[in-house]
Image 1: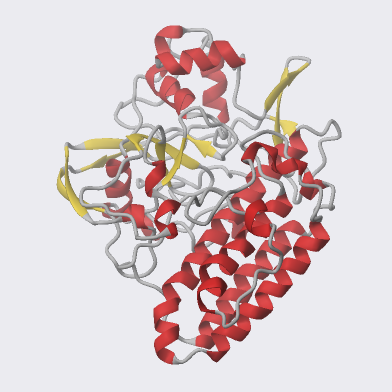
Image 2: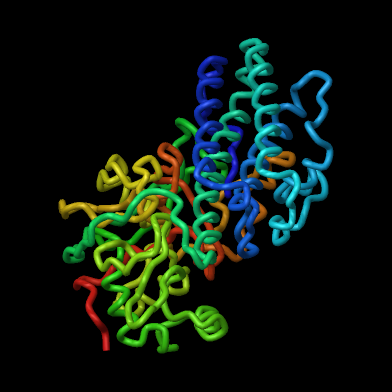
Length: 437
């Protein structure tokens, strides 16, 4: 979760453009919720998951709190208690309802949340339509931050409902259908020059504050795998005792393996000797040609150790993607409506799968860039206070909205997190991944 820096670019201060974009983003959230029943939207299946209706309400609360409350004449909240129920972690705004207990909020229901959204939408449209050019220019960064904040929650909505549906014994389908079975191609390697490189957002267009300031880092020459690690390669890791060999694991990771009984990626289940994978398209036999998804940083690191490789740093990942031209490649993001990682496209000698499919764990702890300063006020809580105990992921996933991710985007999760759509790209090494004895 990240935040807008005051110096990052924003949309032109044009009321019509802002309103078109506002309607586009807000309507897409409702389209994602449309296949779900009110009961689906209320369930919280574990503490990390938020109910769908909570996501719909929280992003609305964001516009009400950071736009309407600041700018609307004679402002009054839609409902006093909503400020408490749908505040996520903004201490400066006031108290908030416990995150692990969001599933206990049976009221307001999904329909009432829709009423809340419509009320705030009407008021935002009225506000933006009435502002003069100077006021629009001043508020455009906050409005655009609201767009990107809502896009983050669109991705989280899909990640979370995937878990909700996975614990239903009926394993209901959210949308779509699986791709035909595939076979992985050989893993290739891309050599990348090192030296003194620049990392971070260049300042043109939107960025979150944790992508700034742009700065220099020294990198030794390195190599990156040209594609993501596949399910087939992960099955080899498992067959070679990957989840039973403590020498492959970081100490905290091995504690997770033993304490939580990890034997396979998060959504894999073995039935009569066959590994099945739960997806938003249903539950199906594991496809060896697809990228492995829903593995933690601990698992990614253990696999890399088993393969005789390592995970890239976030600076290596960003420099490689930008310097090799991979940044302009198309990817498997949410606009493809696959809702799952796809097989790697044909090898080209360059990097593949850098946009979408699954977020890629790096070996970098989530820390501030040199010279980083969070924005003043409650907005400053969006990002900087989480720079402890987290690891950086890069690239985007099949649930990330189109236009939301970019090469400098820094996603982050705790190293043990598995419910996010995360995968693995190897660094260094020189041979295709094979079983290591």
